[in-house]
Image (cartoon, rainbow over all chains, first blue to last red; front, side, top):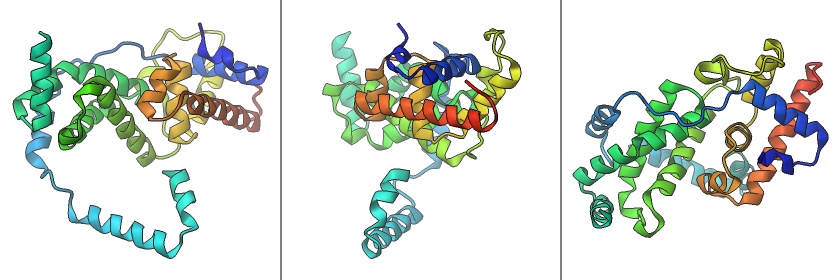
Length: 79
Length: 177
């Protein structure tokens, strides 16, 4: 059963069909290679503590939100 | 068997690297498969699988064994994919790797298929993720909702908005879906 059939709008149903034709479903696919070596490399390369610029960015956003409270809904919309 | 799995999950929660490796080996394929469905790019899905497990590793102390590893991993993977899509150009080509493969419906001309894929790539990532999972991959709305951390109703709204915006975009290009 197609979930899209819940959408009553005739125009949207045809758009939905068009989207299905434009993008092939991926279905069940598995990676051909073991990603553990890349994972281990990542773990060895990066410290677990957030870098300083993450904190600086968070502080900047907090200051901006305090200065312009009206921007908070806009910020969450684009988040 | 069940006790062994519980031990692995408990070890992971404590930050045991061996338990993390065991979980990685158990779940990397399913996480990769989920990510590939969203980003539709083999290379990006592999990178995002590593990124997802890195985030899981960092958040091990917040893991709740009662809620299961797979749904938690899938939700974090979806957020990682969302971040990746936001970082890409809006005109990201969704036709790469997956959609360009043969086997599509011959009734849809190449031009319309390409225009549709391009228009879909211009949608906001949160709409694209909901639509690609629910419409293209035909995953249950509940599964999509859990992965996105939103309600089933919100998934339906996002899918509806995605299709409406897609139709408008195609109509602007002189195509009538």
